Image (cartoon, rainbow, N blue to C red; front, side):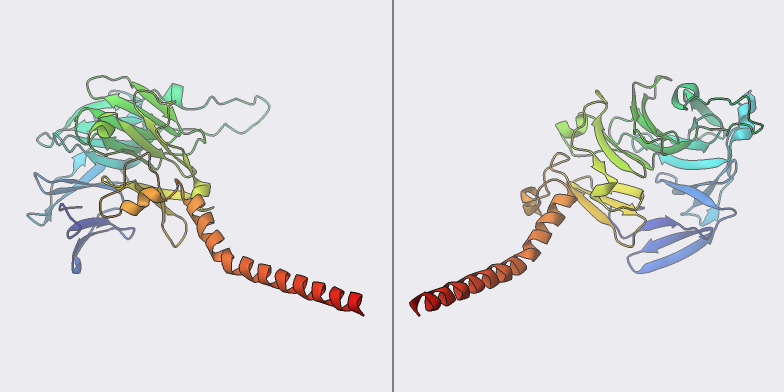
Length: 335
């Protein structure tokens, strides 16, 4: 979103285009040099940051309407891991101080940090790949080499208020919480399925709920909400994909001032989940607090309401047949 409301937005398309939309629809479309993977926006400089396949970050300035000099990533590491980088999976812009964070595909799990005023990376964060990747067994009798497992960054999220906390999702199904002043994570959460983390974000409820540091992490099978102080303590019941559909979850999102969670999956329709533990319902929809937690329970309630006419018809039929049988018995006894 380019504005505080929905009227201006930027969209990264699969056909190598970058589209600018207004409230009237498509305003302008820009062709990208290569296929894009992620998109970020730096409002002070009006730069759209596009992470693509390869080792370049393309910058398109919306104020001047032209491409700026791209950023070269994976340079000057001093090891052999630079050649393993295949692209940029995720771009994150810190809302407090504007620090750019780039999550790389390959390279052993690396996040590069850039200052918008600098032409080179400030530093990089290397994740403990040996501890996150599962151990591989080598079959001495097999002629085939074991599959090569690489660690990549699949999701990034900076804390919206403190400016120091960073949530990192990996391709191994782990979510790591970092303080930017330390290279070691202070919390690690395992999704439990080994699937890449599709989305990680900080829940924004305001007040004590926001200060408690609740994190939402999701892969293609399950959505979990947990606290950064104790990863084993779930702030609300886990949302499994059975609550939404049998399709794989592709992208979940939460409303900052609402108790609703919306999920994109491999189905034509989007699904929503209401959880009272996330936040009280907004003043515009107070009746949401009367609903039970979870989508399945609400769907079952709707199905039960739809079954009421059928049950009434069956009761009426049974009552009619019973009265008919009783009247026939009375007539036979009287005769």
